[in-house]
Image 1 (spheres, rainbow, N blue to C red):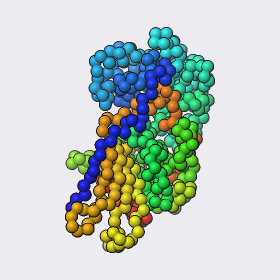
Image 2 (image 1 turned 135 degrees about the vertical axis):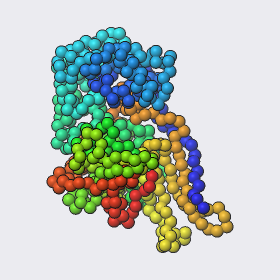
Image 3 (image 1 turned 30 degrees about the vertical axis):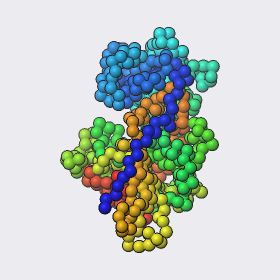
Image 4 (image 1 turned 180 degrees about the vertical axis):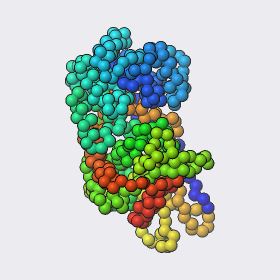
Length: 513
C-alpha cells in the first residue's frame, strides 16, 4: 500500500512581523549598475513589492547610476518592464503612480571623478525634494573588479559619512562572489575596509534571505521538540542539496572561471550548513547570530589531500534530457572553452569537530543540469534498535527524517513510521508536511528591507567570508596542482557515478528529491 501524506497547510508568515514604518529612516538607495540585469530582474521588483507592503520609508528614493543613455522617464520605463516580467506581484496602476516618482537615473562612469561629483549633487537635490536627509545605501550591482574603484570614487567625492550616530548613515551592499579564493577575498575585504566601517558593509548572499532558511533558527530554537535531538546522539547524518535543472545560460562567461565550488559551495551551501549546525546564540542580535555561525566554520575539520581525493567529487554535465527535451553539453555552451575543466557539480563530505556534532557527517552537493530545481536539507535520525518492529535485518525500517525545502514549495516535512490500516501489522513511512500557504517574499525583498533598516543579521561578516574560503582553499589548490577533466554526467541525471560511490562508501545513499 502506498504511503499517505498528511498535508497540513500552516501559515508561517507570522514568524516575521512587519516593522512599523516609523522605524525606517529616510534614505536614497543608489544602485551602481542600476540599468543592469540584476536591477531589472531582482532589485527594482523587490523594492516595488516592499513599497506595496508598506515596508519602505515615507521619504525614499531610488537612483540608478551607470553608463546607459537613460533619463528619469526612460529609467522608469525600464523599471516598469522589470516589475511586469519578474515581480511576484502584479503592477497596480494606482500604486505605480506613487512608486514611479521615487525612481531616478544619473548617467555616469565608475572611473570618472567628475561623475561622482555629479552624482553627489543629484543626491543632494533628491534630499531637498524628497526629504531623504543625506542617508545613503549604495548597492554595488557591479563586477568585483570595480568595488575598490567605486569605493574610492565615493570617498573622493565626500559621499561616505563616518559610522557614527550624529551623521547620516552610509551603507554599502556588496554582491557575491567576494573574491575567487582566500587571497582575493581578503584583498576585497581590505579594499572595503579602507573606505567603510565593518558596520556599514552588507555582504549579500541571497540564499540567506529565503524564508525557509530564515525559519531554520525559529524551527530549532522556538520549538522544544527539536533542539534536544539536534545532536550527534540522535542524528546519523545530514544532507544539503542545491540542484538546478538549468545550465549556465547567460552566466557562462563568469561561470567558466568560477565553477560550482566557488559559485555555490563556498557561499550558499556553507552558509546553510552554518544555520543548521550553529549553537544557540546568546541573543537574536546581529553580532550574536553571526558569531555563532562563525564558530561552525571554525569547527569544520580541514580537508587533507586524502579527504579531497576520496571525499570531494566534481563533475561536468554532458548531453542529455531535461524535461524530455535534449540539451547540449557544458562545453558546447556559448562562451565556454571547448576543453574547459570547470566543474558544474560538486559533492563532498565534511565534519564539524565540536561537542554537538562530533562523528556526524555532513554531505553537500550542488550541480547544474540535474533532473529538477530543488534545494533541500535532509536530517537523518538514527535508526531505532533492531528489536520489535525493526527486528528483521533483511527489511530494516527507514529512519525518521526531517526535510526542509528551501525551494520550490517552501516548507518542511517530518517522515515517520506508521501502521498501514488493516488487520495485518504492516508498517510504512508517512510524511507530515507543512508548507507555506501564501506567497513568501523574495529573498531580495527581505535583504533589501534589512539594508534599509540597518539589520546585518543575514549578511556575511568579513571574518565569516574568509573562514569559508579557508575551508574551500585546499580543494582549489589540489585541483590546480592536479588538473584533470571532471567526470562527465548526463544532463538530467543526479551527477557523476563517483558521487554515489563516495556516499555509498559510508553505507549511505543520496536522497532522491
